[in-house]
Image (cartoon, rainbow, N blue to C red; front, side):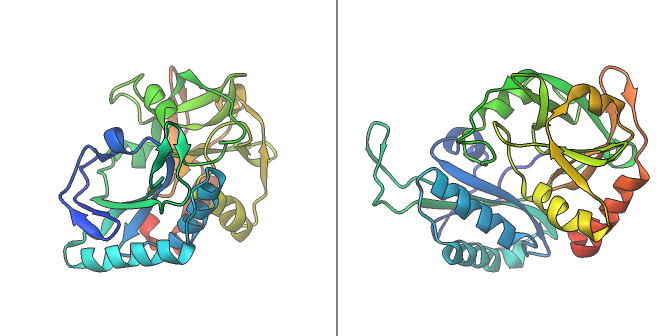
Length: 284
């Protein structure tokens, strides 16, 4: 279950905690990163700030990588006396002002918002038996320009996630052609007869930090190949094992897809999880 943000810093000013940040104030012109905190450090910080910097430029917001690192480091230093061992940090960069209507005042410095909460409690069944999944009815619209970017407009995910309460852990999101793209909170990897496959992110969806880490670092580390291509839903249903991943929760094996398909947690998935935890112990 999720918890409210316990500490919030806007620029360099600490403010009272707010559980309303996500759905009221953070879905406009900007980008964000959600990263795992372990022992009051951000193990994947460099990956996150590089992606945020890259994506900011694509939507006409100017950022500085070193400044972003310094802000997160400062925040964590102030948080350290009360920081839980495992938490979630959200780094948001939003447009600093408007020149009227939709026109952006490009001379304005962007607003930087950093927030922290304790790591959400996982359901025991998800870790021991695998995640329970469904296929979302909502279809992701095509937008090649914004494809891959973790921008603040997450209405697609909100609409998809609203289709169920607590009976499932996550849902597969398809595009307008019914091709598999991602889930509501992560990227998908599945084991085909020819090896690992992950859906191509070229017209919609998010290129997650954990997805990139698995493709570029973990797969070569365990001598596995990866095919990045268009994926049809039947391939997921027929695969031998699959998992969902993101930078907060790592690799999450799937055990069930509604209405009646089940998997055991595969040995290949376990191998990838072990490799990830050796590099980053926070994902044990």
